Image (cartoon, rainbow, N blue to C red):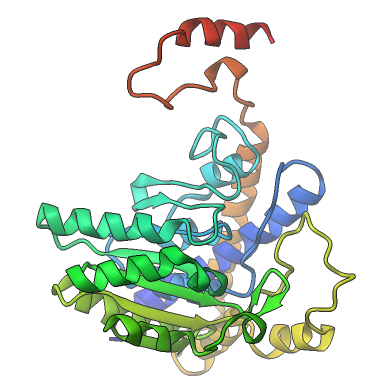
Length: 339
């Protein structure tokens, strides 16, 4: 299972869309245009895109709190994502989700969650739904290395194994849960070995190699779609920035500047794949420049859309929260309008 020529270029485009979107998001966060917390996935683009490209459009996905990149990896448009970061009405969740709670049914993203491991049982339930409905959809569940120590991880993998659910648990192991390393928090640091406790395959892959991630995930997807059950995929990757831009951890030396510089210099997934495309796949520089220019323009348009989108009116806060409005709903809305 290899990326064909069209998918190789699409992989590069999506990785670059994530990187440039995140970079613009960081600029806007520092300018006060994006409220709340802001977790970026710069450095983890290959893991995201390689996994997402192994899916069909109608397959489902759940994300994490570090999930701006996951919708982009699945093919989502940038405009509504940027507006959502800004809490605007034009956002994918109309400004009600924000940075950690993107949901986009148009590309199969059923949820993301600010709770560590919060998406794992949801993905398991989504896979169970596909099994009950008798369809061959699979669910891709993104999680971090910190989430494998949560109870929901163990409960969900056990259930998915017993029922042979069509779900891929995809761990983006960036080595640190905030400032705590895997070595400090995991009795067994080889995360893929945990799969054996539930009788399912556990596979480790280089998360900075988009082609390798695609191949590994595609094999897991094929297995799940055939009714053989779940797989735990562990992509060893690295985040270039700190856990959350709103929290200053510089006073806590949890990793060295030399370590970060080494990954940026030698293990940047976009630079690595760009070199592969030029040197091994015969792609010319002009084609890549065209993709890069197109991505820059798309991010520029997304920023303009986000900035121009209106803030939600307070009275619209309860909208879409209830299928059947609760008693007193109308008076509550009227009170909001007067605030």
